[in-house]
Structure formats: C-alpha cells, structure tokens
Length: 336
Ligand code: DAS
Image (cartoon, rainbow, N blue to C red; front, top):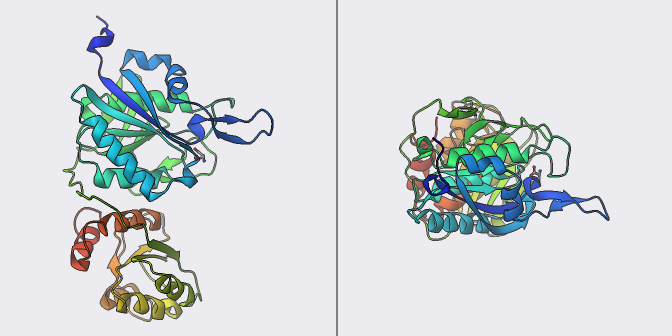
C-alpha cells in the first residue's frame, strides 16, 4: 500500500545556491546560481515517493561567497523550521566548495535533533550527467528517515552520507568528491533504504547567540617566518588557527609569531595539512608539536584547518575561557 501525500514525512528544502542550483548564462556561458527552490523540487519528481517537500530561498550564492555570519543565520533558520512538529527534517542545497564549513557550523549550533542534509552537485543543472537530482533525492530520503535523527548535519552525495565533522571535498570536479578520511561514510542510501554504518553519537550542540568572525587560518610551510602571524595579530584577530605538517609541527622560524599571539591572549589552535589522522603533539625541537603545546597551543584533533577555524569562531561566541576552548578541541568530541 503506498502512502498518501498526507502520510508522508514533510521535508523543508532551504536553498543557498551552489552548482546544484546553477546553470550557464546564455549570453556569457559563465555558470552561476539561477535555479529557484520550486524548480529544484520540480526536477526531482521521484522524491514524492518519500516525502512532501516544500522549499524556501535563503541565498543564491556560489559557496565561496558564504560567510560565517550567513552560516549562523542559516543554522538559526533551520532551528526555526525544525521546531514545526510537522517537519521531519531539512535539506540545504549548497555549493560543494565550502559545504564542509557550513555543515560543521550548523552541526555545532543546531539545537534540533532532526536531521539536516546538505545536498550538492559537481555538475550544473544543464550539464550532461548532472548529479544534482540524484544527490537531492538521496538527501530528501535521509532527511525523511527516522534513522537520521540525532545525527546533526550531514552531507549527502553520490549515495553516501558523511558526517559534517569529518567530510571534506577531495576532488575539484569528480562527482565522487566527498570523503571522510580515516572514517568512511557514516551511511549509505540504497534503492531500498537509508542505512547507517555507525550508531548516532550523543550530540552536544553549543548554545551560542553570536559568533566571532575575526578568526584567521594560516597555513605554515617550510622556512616561513612569523611576519604573517604578527600581521594578523596586529590587525585585531580574536583567534588563530595554524595549519602545520605531520602530527602537528610548524617551522621553528614561525614560532615567535605564535608566541606573539599567545602573549596577547589569543587562543591558538593547531591543525595538520595531513588528510587523515588526529594530531599527536609529541615532538620537541623548535616548532615541534610538544614544544607548541607546552607554549599553550591547543591541539585541533582531527579537524582540518578550515573546520577548526569554524569551531573556534563558534566557541569564541560562547566563551573567552581558553581552558574551555581547549576542552572542546582536546576532549572526546573529536578523535584525538
Ligand atoms: N564548486 C561549485 C559547486 O560544486 C560552486 C560552489 O561551491 O558554490 O557547487
């Protein structure tokens, strides 16, 4: 017996732009967001078997133009939408470039335990083999699934479900671009269902009323000195994330800049350029991870540099207490 539309779960689609909502401008050929939420939904008639989907616009931007303020406003809108008892879950259409940042920010602050599934595409709506319709259908199915409750924000692409905390974009153009290095997908979407490989972990959303946008991320490479770090500090940043190498090490020549930031009371979070694995700040020597941690640098666990920046700017909206910030990054929220 098939469910009537009244019996189906209701899913809200919030559109932000990205390739999934893009097509080429007929005059210039340049690709940009041009597809409204109603068109996105109309392009996937198969979702009507799984959910009743309604849509609303939030933004129409390429995702490299998303800002933390927009991400936070999106999270607040999601909580308002999900407070409706009729709504089972939400889908956010978004660009692939920065969905790993937006989904993490939403995951950190979303108070609702209903699922938020980010749907993306690498090929625009008019391209041969456009992946948007399949990804959107899968995202709706996950958002409508009771099994997705309590899992926060996820990215659904290529029939895989990735947790916001671990998902990264790995390829510039291939539709199979999303991965969770060191973990694999949290689940899959198959013709017969939505299956999670791991149980939902207990979420502890952060109850923040604002976020601190003045957080910089600096990638440190061999022989780099401290000038860029000092410039950021003098420019008035409120927090600093550094991306070093290996288990969490930076060139010794940059360390005076890190001390400069710490001496001025800034939290400094260390991440690695490696694609998988948590930090292991063991090494002495100038710039070694142990040396940095002894100075007061916080180890960023498995978070990539862009993700650690998002986490730090959210945390700074909650507290200035460096020990609390340290507990967030070095506690059991992220693998260490
Ligand atoms: N890279 C494009 C995308 O895949 C554009 C964007 O990120 O907005 O969606």
